[in-house]
Image 1: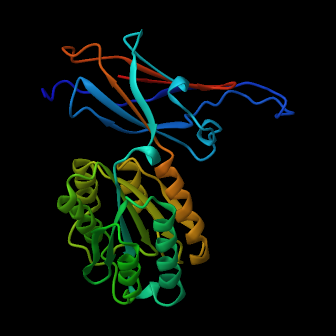
Image 2: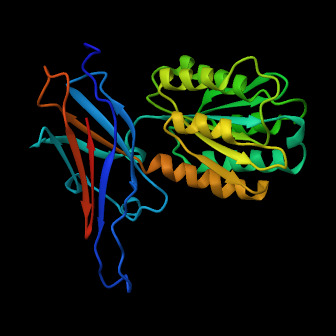
Length: 301
């Protein structure tokens, strides 16, 4: 494929919410987008795959959507969609590396709760999905390479001991490297949990961001708050890798956060179509999502 032919994502969203009986008070139009473009796949251009995600407070994100609820226009001309699928129904494994802070500050209840939350996350996902487990402290430990065997994964997590410093950036880099061993996994995610700022890594925030973008991996991060933890770095990493940062006030909140991230991953939509402009370098694209009295439109180019 000629790499000069690309789709550079920029989002301009107009969301209309109409009043109906379930809402006793008027609801104004939202200025910020409640829809995210999680990923655009043009490796087989003119075949295009766009992955849509919804923000936490999106009403559309709570609905069960089908192909008839989506419309795609290129240069104002409507496209016949090949398919629209929820990621959870796509017969392809989702790959997730669970990246856990195993430094000394996680000792005791925090690491125990983290292990329980990671196990719950795997239970929430599908049987075909695969997971790897990486821990970071003074050094990096690969507790499990990619597998769908839940028992082996739980056994690996149970072996984790919390001690030492925090090599957060090095840990994320090693976690990203795990996808080299499973290159057939198309849907790639990291969930990074840490309660502290990096103290001993040889690599930098920018190294992590560059590699995540190169490997096309979405990174969700959970900051387990402590008195000296500044989550700025981990937040920047997640946002640069199409993910989000979540804050846990204490380790008892981890299970709900991991469950929420599982739903976010499974509830993404994959829109597939063939472009009408295979020999054009620049295309204006409009995506419309509509159901009941809710309509969102996204313009990209």
